[in-house]
Length: 540
Image (cartoon, rainbow, N blue to C red; front, side, top):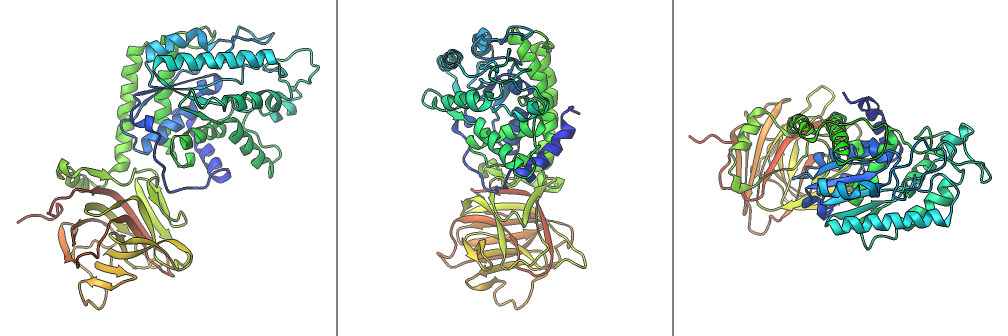
């Protein structure tokens, strides 16, 4: 296991508790993620650490970005963009311009993500000369990357947190005899890095985007110190720990169109991604060359590529295991004609692409989990981001059965409209509810009540249901006709009056109830161009 992975889980829990509010909705990913084949990250020791890159890649894999751009970490410790080195540093600081042409020529990136500045003030008080050198170095980087044809994403330098060094008595006053990374000027963040970050933020015209690290990280530190004055993420104010590295991923992910939530990163998938990232990081640093002493050589690129492919196969298997339903379900999916364009509504890891109340809905272990312990004042739904009119939906559902759990049914909400319902519930629904588990048929919510079977006075139980176990359910909506099958047996075939059905999001139901209830869903494969036959029903 990667040496960082054990503490990574703790870091995610800390961030989930301290920083983020879960959002179940997703924005549109940045356009370059749809076309880029390779993204190269450049920076100093913070990027060299690379855990924030592994968090980003893990999130993109979980979000189902396909094809996924290859992300290469070429961060180098001690590096800057000016060629400046403070007196007493054990070696001349590497300058990215010494290697930038080679990196661009050998990696052929479509996108370059670059962060410099924290080393470029060389830990001294502000000076116009050093600031001019930083501006010149950054503009040269912008020019070289632009001329290569790659898009450039700039990140402002992160802040220097003076608290850890102050506790050690190592901060340097303005009149100190020397300044270095071991003796940092006490105003280095507010007087130097803040100014550098502000200037980088003005470069939005010649680059694809500028992302701010300086402000969000300082804001996080300030929030935590409202309740814990000793809160830190670094031993020296520069090199952040697992929480800090995970925090750095957030502004990038959000700028690239993904909702807040690195706490949603699966730690086992992250460990595999990070293992692959570190392997290729060392190999590419060696392959492209640099002047920084003390960096362990990586594998030759050909050998590293073979080793990375083996890790990639493990990543693919892990992701597939989270997407999957039962073997029976997956064999059924394979029989769906490609012309129907099957799509998985659930990425297997989190609720990205869905909208719902996180008090009731969560994701874990390849399943969507809907449950309540307190009263649900009105039926609440987890809705897809997209709307559908004609569709085939295959899913597996399991209702928890116990003396304390209600046997109230669940349903697929479809072909109606999302509404605000009783109890300040923004995730209500008006229209057809395609019911399953302990009651089957169609209930037309807030309109006509039960419409299938017509006139049926009570709940409809079916022999095909596996109570308390996994049920494979298929719904097929074409035109005004809605059909349902459970475990290979057709349950109903209903045709509505023209004009009653319309495109809408698809929702998973947690019914209004005063008792606890619990449903798990997996599989969730939808075809927006369905044929006319129920694929789960055996033909005789």
